[in-house]
Length: 457
Image (cartoon, rainbow, N blue to C red):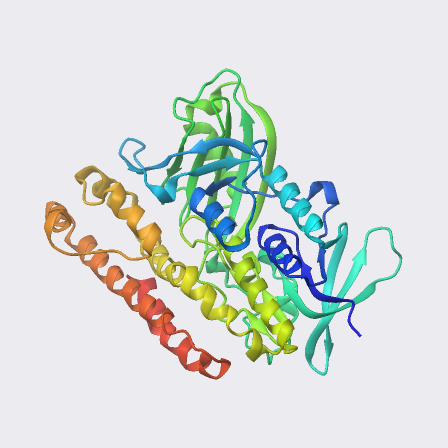
């Protein structure tokens, strides 16, 4: 006997979109979150979303337009700064148009949408562990704030949308094909503050800033995201590789000391830290009666840690496949498997390619970056193209002339060429994602040598 068709653990962006889509298709859905109902949406985040993600959600599931009170300011582009703080690349194009928004209000709006669609919300409730029946996931055990006893809830499908912790994923049996843990080197820790700046007016509040500095934010970056003329979201992220420094310490010693607006009067709106995966998607995101969405599935851009748009996309694909499986009365791993290739085709291929590029970026120095920016070896359109397609083009013509202009850095240029080839190789492998679980082991074996080479590029 089941209580719901689907239980979604986690009311973040991916979880909410999953629940919303399933409810619109007529399924009974329970969405659980550990936060109080009025606090859902409070999360460490860059608070920015590309317009193309919003349009895609409207096209796929009829998601309404973002309410005006959620949007802080419209975004038209991104400036990427070299470590010297002088040279920069401006990236302006369709994929950089979007919004800086109020993350809390967006979370509340998404939950309201799910409620209006018929989803039951259980807030202030911790999901403690998955339940099993004959070795297969059959529900969850929860602990609701104020209740003395835990409660067992049953569902035909359970969706783990618990974020970077992967609370349910980590408790799957060893026999599961799903990866239980995410390596430290594939995670980023971040710190960010949101300020009102009454004494300072940002000249270009529609332009987001990303600052590279390998000595201070190894494997990460500092972001300065205006949310209007007198408000800013400023933070940083670093990879959790050996020797990394806690981001709050870097924030205090580096950001506070080197950004002029930090010396003006600041009114703190929010201050918090968090963790996010920065890697390719989990190799398989399904098991019997079980699916992963959002950060729990590592549906995050490996370069910038952004995961709102990709989590939304993952939520739609998960919900659509789950609905089809429920209608077939077959929620086995094989029946849910199509979620994997659908996500890989729509975003995972690019994500895997950017994961290769991440390792290249980790291994370049501040001098390399300054040189490439100063000499024009890299243009904003190059990085914009990489971020959109996950492909680095190295050929003749104008780009070849720019590469030759950097002849003083021949080893660097050779590495650029090598990583471009590796990015293409990984895209080829992901374009051949197995159509059934039986092909997973052989497919994963093809990934290993490419990523091993990427880490040395």
